[in-house]
Amino acid sequence: MDELKSIRSFVKVVEAGSFAEAARQEGIAKSVITKRINQLESHMEMELLQRSTRKMSLTDTGANFYERCVKIISDLDNAKSAVSTMEWGLTGKFRVSCVSSFTAVCLAQDLCEFGREHPGLSIELQQHDRFCDPVHEGFDVCIQTGDAASGVLEAIQITRVRRLLVASPSYINKYGSPTTPEEVSQHPFALNNYVTPSQNITLIKGNQVSQVPIEPVILSNNISMLHAAVMGGECISLMPIFFIEKEVLSGELIPIMTPYKVQDISLSAFYRRSQYVPMKVRIFVNFLRRKYGEKPPWDLRVLEKMPELNLFSEP
Image (cartoon, rainbow, N blue to C red; front, side, top):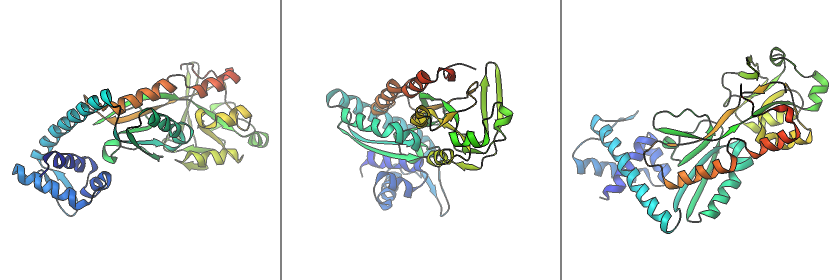
């Protein structure tokens, strides 16, 4: 029995929630995972996992063992990473997930650049339009909205995502443009229900903070759908500046309610909470933070043309 492989498989099964998912993430047969866990339990002469046809759960002994194994594996991986980074550069698999909007505009190119800087890495990118748990889904890091870390997850902000209420010129010619928060509620809306599940948007003007209820005619977690809807001229929408910079600068989309600032959100890197964060994760997160920071380039370009937007003002 390879004890270290068996321990890694045990940790993977716990975090993935099943033998089948752990095997999928590892790229090996389920039977191999099962054999390793059985050998580990036999070697230790104790039951670590309770199995039934419906669910799997940790025994008390298994839970205690899992916590210790996570630390052991983290220490070992970081020791290996530190040595390989000093001598050869970053190596091994690097699995990243990201919301599809930021993938399309930025992260796909960012990862190619990062790969050129660290040719020893084997990079995998998956995109999503939902919250992705890096521990349970087997990613090194997930780039997504939100900044609330919880449980075994850590979240580090990459940049602030500033958004604009926008409409097409044809929409404004046909329906007019709202001038008060109350009027916004009366307009047909295309809303991202991943970013704004409550169906309320926050508008800020000086010390005035307005919670505006929205009844969307288009509801989707896919930003391309929302983009198509607002460009079609039959609704307004709330869109991140990085995704609509070209349309705003060209006049294809018009910012509305410009005396107000839309509450911005955080784009963060989520990864396993640990005293020793893997070197490849730390270097990648710092790479992104240096590129984008508190005032990303797309915000500065739009603000140069439209200083009335006052994007960086505080509520």
